[in-house]
View 1 (cartoon, one colour):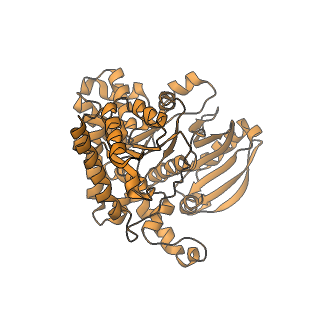
View 2 (spheres, rainbow, N blue to C red; view 1 turned 180 degrees about the vertical axis):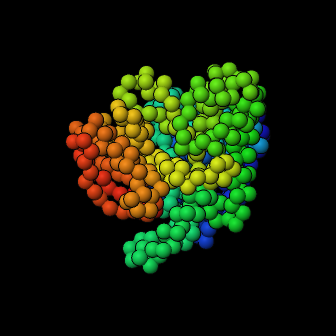
View 3 (cartoon, rainbow, N blue to C red; view 1 turned 90 degrees about the vertical axis):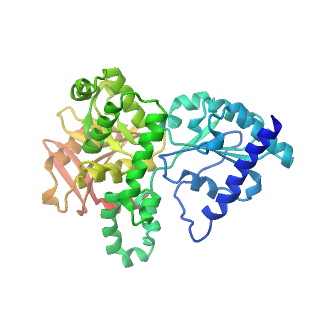
Length: 430
């Protein structure tokens, strides 16, 4: 058993030694905004979609290569690895180097019962970092399995600020005015092709995005969940690409796809959950004080990257809304909560942000270049919602394409101050 363990350990170490110098070279290094805080006796979990840069970020944390043991669970050498195998590798490392390694576990969702392995390593006093491409790693269920011994961070595709940095456009200080027109123009490319790091830097943007989408479908959906009803999963993917930033319900999906794909409602629910778990989409719930109504209400579908909409019905207004949701997820880590909202009068607010027990923000998004182009329903929705949450004094915002202002509005004794801000400027703010 020892020779096998040593062989596997050497392969893992070779992976670190061969990749880190190249990944961390000064020429190619692109900083990310994510900042983590290491807490003793807690694992650091970094969760995000495949190819968003989690491994690069993991390597950026490394100071002295020989102190680290890197295990990539996408590597064939670790195919069918169990928690016991990884513990054996760590023990072999300690015997060889006579010290504890800092353990980096990449794409850990591929290992059954990986939580037991992480708890064991923490109990032994080791420093542990974990990455994963499964939204379940963000859930309270995982925190329960790890018994409160983890801090989880979300790393999505590039923010607009990171996008500009990758493109070599400086937006800080005086350079903001120097590059003003380039910054405003860059938002169109950002919405069109999205924020995957490799896509941003490549000339073959659409081709790479297509490969990413096919990889997610194959590895993170079909293989991980052993999908049997291929026609149904294909229809769901087609549906999400053409209806992102729109509402859906299990009943409506069943009426649309049930007979065509010979699927039960339960199967449709499970498959949609698989798409979300693979971090291909995210589903936004409607805010209501009633938990039962919150569960039963239709959800809104958002893509994990606006670039994927190239393979469906691309629409700049929906791209704007999708980009705002992704930015809200970056800015507001749990326990902040993000929803959409319907007023009693039937008006919709695109985003409601709840923080520290209060409604902090109400946001609508519209493709308007001037005040006259703003649909009055956007304003009325915010005023009606503000009336319901007046005790919390939420900030009212309408994100536009190119209109900026602050106005006080009145509608049938409902009053509120609305801030209008162009999307590119809102995305630049932190």
